[in-house]
Length: 544
Image 1 (cartoon, rainbow, N blue to C red):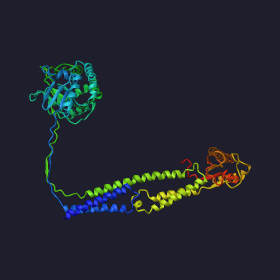
Image 2 (image 1 turned 120 degrees about the vertical axis):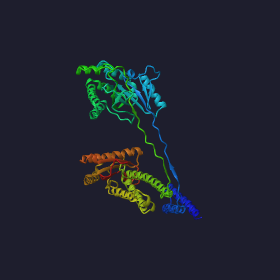
Image 3 (image 1 turned 180 degrees about the vertical axis):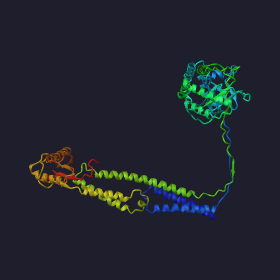
Image 4 (image 1 turned 90 degrees about the horizontal axis):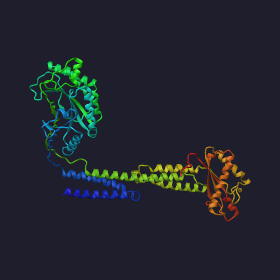
């Protein structure tokens, strides 16, 4: 029964919270000030009642079982590429160029079309299988170094387009006879410097890989005479590859294609040299030693392949005691509502701030200003200042406003003070300075003009806004033009008195702002006047 009471109370207070929230959200400045404290009180009550309800429910326990299935790594597919692959690794009696050694599938590639076909097939039907390239090289494959380089470059040119469009990790392997060791224990009759590792892509250049292999051979301990012989011959072979130009040709294959070289392997195989080629002939010319040929042709063996084994995931079984979270949904609800409310109010204040900035710009602009309009503007700012000052103590403003209302009031007061400080002068009521329908200054205007000149010299850093007026004789458009000409006449007179031209601004009001009745000659004389406003430098005249 107690749980039901708390549940009903929780639903009711949540409904009140949401209702007051949406009312405050939809009508931020039309709701009574008491609505905001009511909404906050309802939010606090929601959290308190739900906490009490959760304490009534208590705790519970569950059993959890977590397990992961093991993933078996895919068997790799290794592509035999290069000019030596078709000569030394193809099977004449096979209908397909595929071989299966251990867990790897070896595919001998003879043409660019075949490479493209194989890659497309693997991408479509075995996309998870790792694809690796194997580039064998036999130093005695051609008679001379020149023919060897020519053969490499010809193969590179044939496969250029295919290798550029496909990114494949590749291992380079050098096959030759390096020692007189007899390997009865090895079915392939070969000794490898390392295994072919199918691993995540690690790219290097050919020169660096060659140096790494040379360093590996130098640091390898020589256990017997065969190891010593292999070490000496290998270092000689690597030096020959570097100085003969073959290294540069092979390096171009990798640098100008998408093949990513990861390692160079070395294979010491056979019971003698298969044939005498570029490498054998170089040994004869340098050391007068022509290596002996083997008793038969031994085909190059494939290297042992190492596949990284993914660690089997451990199956975890556990029994966990679950305690209800301390962060209840009511806290999340209240936080969300407060965030939405603050965002909504921030957006509302941004709009209000933009409108206030436009208001300040309009009131600070002095273009087309006159004494009459200046007085109206000051009265408007005073009313706006009084209205906003009353809002400073508002509960709604104090709780939700991001920009203090006093900031707006201070800006209004500052602008109003500046406008009130503008010195003004009008020629109305004094001697006539213009004839009706004329913009020419009368001789009697000299006294009035001297007063204007004294005012201009009294405020040497301020601009002078010269506003021309007319009576209502004639059309309004003509009177507007006439009042502008009268302002220009006064400006020209001031220019003759050495007042800087950049200080002088003109404006025309026409017959729109009479100070006397136009039905009498005296009234019309008063309306044919000039007004001078001395504008402080901090009020920009180009704001509108």
